[in-house]
Length: 254
Length: 254
Image (cartoon, rainbow over all chains, first blue to last red; front, side, top):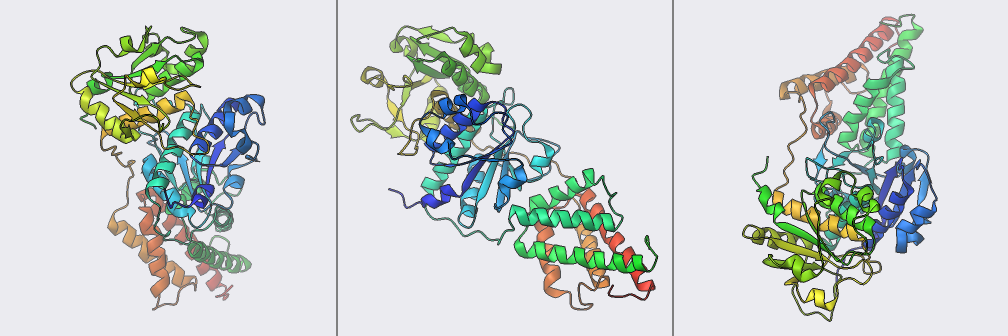
């Protein structure tokens, strides 16, 4: 008998981004249900709903019928306070890389306070840089370096399994340390940051490109608190006000 | 770098008994290979070899071509010294029931001396009593009691994963290489930040106090790269220039 709180599992969302094969969506839903997870969100799937997805879901087709479909990953993550991406190891990305048990512990700890998400990218191309920039950490399954290609549903199975084991083994979790900003609040901060940097002539209007991605990476790693977002936006507002004062004076570059 | 001996994995055999669907055989082979296991033995499969098995094996079709087919489970286990069966928990069977990590440790320990086997029964009916009688222990994956039906290949994935984790023993992933800023560079950034915030009238000159501490906390968590420090200081310089332009114009608060 466990005293583990079932609501914790209900606050853990599995997000499949741009899935190509509907069968994998069904198989992932089945894998989740076997471990007590129910919240599946699909971001722009190639084909869904679909009879092959239903067939592969087997006894989990009830939950598959409730899966949410979103147009963008931002939309899928709007109310979440922690986002981890599942990815093969990448040398070009600087962020915390966790094992599945570490990820399970983090997700369950934060799920006490708010919805959290575990994101899986496309079967072939994995997660894009834009998708990765929405994640506060990466999870890597230690696989055979000579053949590390887990099927999508198999990867969902391994992570869901680890979440359940952690959940069963630790009925009591420490409280989350941080009053974390939601995905939505962080997105509004990025929009403000970009606008302010353009105003400061630090970014070219229309082509913020690589630099904004780098700044997103920096803050994604941090996992901002609500209060910190407010402080940072206060700074941006002060800089914008300064720039506007300067512009009025006909002194654009200062 | 691991010092784990690859021969240990070569001594661990996955046995699939009376598998109905050839696709599951291929998917199981793929799951095994992702975790460095190569020895698949099929006992009286309904259909094999088969193109669907090859398709599901994906990059593991090389190993699938080497899978051994036996008429009986006894034949498949002839040279083994330890046999564990994977099964939903059964109250009618009196034997040791292990978790996947416990099973992985046992298998690896024994594999130092001789081949060992992990047996999976038929997709629908599981293992027969005769098959169970050849096992020295049972392994059960702690699943959702309301829906514990893992797909065969998914169960193979979970067990293979646990074997690999135990084999790696300490899956220590080196941190992604970050060209980290030195303490000195970060301190100079903080000094610049504080000066800029005072200039922007965002901080009171002389009592930066609590807010600077909060900002230090934010960036301390991040572990900044050199390049990121340069970007951030570039932004500060742009904001300062804007403010100076504004001040020259006699417009201090703007």
